[in-house]
Amino acid sequence: MGTLDGEEFQGGTATEVPLELGSQRMIPGFEEQLVGAKAGQKLTLDVTFPEDYHAKDLAGKAVKFATTVLKVEERLLPELTDEFAVEFGVKEGGLNALKQQVRENMQRESEQAITTRIKEQVFDGLMGLELLDIPKALVDSEIEVLVKQRQQDMQQYGAPAQDIDPTQFETQARRRVSLGLILAEMIKENDITVPPTRLREAVEKMAASYEHPEEVVKYYYGDKERLKEVENVTLEEMAVERVVSQANVNDKNTSFDAVMNPGQTAD
Image (cartoon, rainbow, N blue to C red; front, side, top):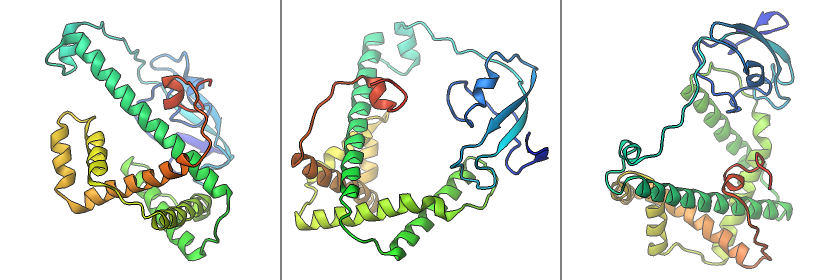
C-alpha cells in the first residue's frame, strides 16, 4: 500500500504483483530496496516519484510503500541440448538449428533497431531546422489522440482511471505533427511511391518472426486497410532513406546489446 504524508493515494495499492528485480518497471529506488528480501518479509519502501510522472499530484513527491514479499524465485537456465531445442519448438536440426534461428532473429531485430535509430536521428535533424509554423489546431488534435492512447494503455494494464494532464503531451504532439507535415511535403516534392516489390518485402519482413509467416502475409494482403498501414510506414522509411542518401554518414561499430538497449550499455 502506498501512502503520501500518511494518507493512502489512488492507484498505490496492488496485490500479488510479480516483479523481476532489475527490470526497472517500478519507480526508481523501489526494486533496489527489495534486493536480499526473503519470503514473508514485510518492508516499508521509501521512494520519490519522478518530476515528470504522469500523475501530477504525485510528481516529485516522496511516498512510502508498505510491502510484503510473498515468495522469492530464481531463474535457472536450462542446459542447451538437442532435447531443449525440440521443447523450444525446433522439430528438425536440434541445437544447431535453434542457434541458427536465434542468430537470424537477432540479425532481424538489430537491423530494425538500427533503422529506427537512424530514423530518429533524421527526425531530430529535420526538427532542428524549424522549417515551418505548426497550426495550433493540429497540435491540439494530436494531443487528444495521445491522451486517449494513454488512457487505453492504463485500462489495458488494469491501472485505475486517473485524470491526465494534456500539457505533458504538447512537445510530443508538436513533434509528430511537424514531422508528418515535413515528410508529406518531401514525399510529394520527390514523387516517392512504394513499389509492389518493396511493399511485399516489408510485409514478409514483418511476418518472418511468426511461426507461420505465410499466414501473416495473407492476413495483410487480405485487407486493404492493414496493407495501407504497412505502405505508409514503408513510404516514411523511403523518405528517410532519401535524406540519408544526401547526408554525410559515419558508420560506427557497436555491440548487439548497445543497439537493442541504447543508454543502458556503454558505447
